Image 1 (cartoon, rainbow, N blue to C red):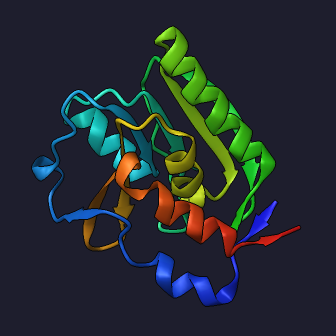
Image 2 (image 1 turned 30 degrees about the horizontal axis):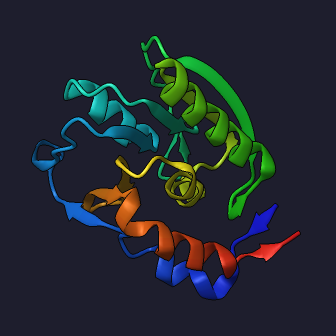
Image 3 (image 1 turned 30 degrees about the vertical axis):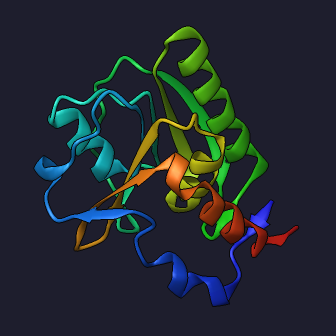
Length: 163
């Protein structure tokens, strides 16, 4: 398990990619698409995007959410306490990306805990042409290109404490 150190929290509050104020400004083209977060995933689906991998925790800004995703993706479940990246989450992301790239299936990972930090392993495990979308609370949606951000994600993960 990787634990987020206190001194890294402020850095991770800044967008890792392009911040878009409106979801309608987001252009993912034909890229492999990963969405992280309930609102981001819902917005992607409402805008006609079909994420290859979605990662949700049924919470919006730390509050329980009762929305239901009516999606045909294969469901994977993972445990991931707040402020961590667990082996369970890492393996679920890896399995989902592998299934999506090799078999063309779509996956939704439902996290028991918190999915916020799933962006980092998603960047590191994703194919180079991947776009990752995640929410920036009260600001918009962040578009991350895995190929342009993998070294930054690796640098950040090296600062996590291993437990």
